[in-house]
Image 1 (cartoon, rainbow, N blue to C red):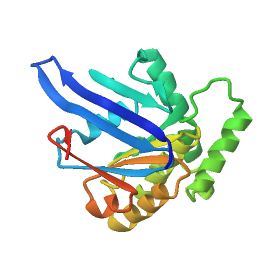
Image 2 (image 1 turned 120 degrees about the vertical axis):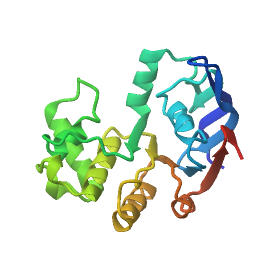
Image 3 (image 1 turned 180 degrees about the vertical axis):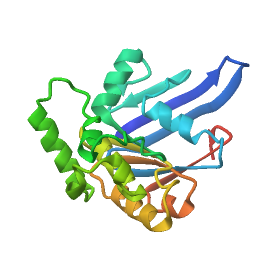
Length: 219
């Protein structure tokens, strides 16, 4: 059996403001290295919150989070940012591209390390665009790309740093059926562990493991 890339032990979230509210009840979850996992549930169930904790965008208020055996829950804000930069690629429903910049320049935003030489940045960005089938639009401004192309550029931006984990939160929500299918096929073909947040049960069934969350707890 594959080793656990992500291991959550009693991870939960309770916020104090504006009133004390339980967002996530304690959760135990293991995501093996190389797995494709779909996280499903109704709107407001806690899917995005759980994905944000796994991606170290938001700290949990309780429990232990281990990534390849190392405690993520003990990291401060600066260390969490470094963890994200080194290990996690994000793809959201909105591609969040800068329209005035080229596809390649948008992909380059995924390389945070300032010590990487310009030639290496360009090479890595072109390789990432090639991986998503868009090498030919490297110099095209994002504003001129179709919806499906924009989302594939966003995937290239997530891949360019070689993440161990890709978190895709409703990545097909703004796409038509044809482009949505193409994006899903691309995501499930990646050489990285995938956590897909989706309300689309057909998409979820492509995964190795389907995790259902309802009212902040695993069903």
